[in-house]
Amino acid sequence: MNFENTIALVTGANRGVGRVYVAELLARGAAKVYAAARNPDSLAATVALDSARVVPLRLDVTRADEIAAAVRTASDVTLLVNNAGALSFGGALEVGQDAIDRDMAVNHGGLRDVTRAFTPVLEANGGGTFVNMLTLLSFVSAPGFSAYNASKAAAWSMSMSLRAYLRPKGIAVVNAFPAGIDTDMLAGIEASKDTPEAVVRDVLDAVAAGEEDVYPASAADIFAGWRADPKQVEAAFAAMM
Ligand SMILES: NC(=O)c1ccc[n+]([C@@H]2O[C@H](COP(=O)([O-])OP(=O)(O)OC[C@H]3O[C@@H](n4cnc5c(N)ncnc54)[C@H](OP(=O)(O)O)[C@@H]3O)[C@@H](O)[C@H]2O)c1
Image (cartoon, rainbow, N blue to C red; front, side, top):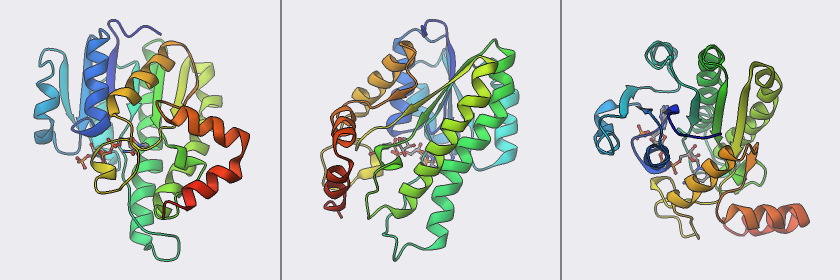
């Protein structure tokens, strides 16, 4: 896939990885990028990347009314990056149901509902691509992020089954499994982190190459280690409590 003249939508585009997706898509020649966020007032820096090509959009991925409105506005999209995400802290023995519900609502429910709503749009536009921001924690748990791990595992499971429905419609599903990234999400957590720029470049390179699963930046080595010895990686993640 070539991003030249592509029309894209990025959820959670006001900060972190989402804003970098917008910047990189613009750099690769996108004709228009809908930058979606819960609060459009928080999109000023993203729109300032290129106010002629960036279109701000209100979108809380847990709100059906806002998803329906986004579909009406962004009816020309062929690339949609399901980037919005939420992370609640807490281990399995202490995390509350409210935190589990929140992470599930955003990371699984939001991805599902945005994908369902935009599938007819991509299909009508001749096919396209959904890029889903998952995580290595979709398949290796970090004990202190119990709700997040579960929500991203559920999102991974759904993303694989979505492929079966979307492939015949000419729509690809690309799942990205990053390691830690240096954004607000892990602020205050001592860990080695990739830059969002390195992650986004690798994901978009994989989309361009037609790959279905991508382990960007330092995730590539961790995934290789997991394939060789899953228990060793499980133990290493457990040690990060
Ligand atoms: N950072 C990491 O280490 C890491 C690693 C692997 C994967 N990821 C994934 O990468 C994606 C981007 O993460 P990030 O590091 O950029 O996180 P971040 O800096 O915490 O940003 C999260 C983004 O998601 C948005 N968001 C949260 N709830 C939302 C909702 N209900 N509707 C719409 N937008 C919502 C936030 O908007 P507000 O500003 O309105 O809160 C913000 O734009 C996430 O899916 C995350 O799980 C991150």
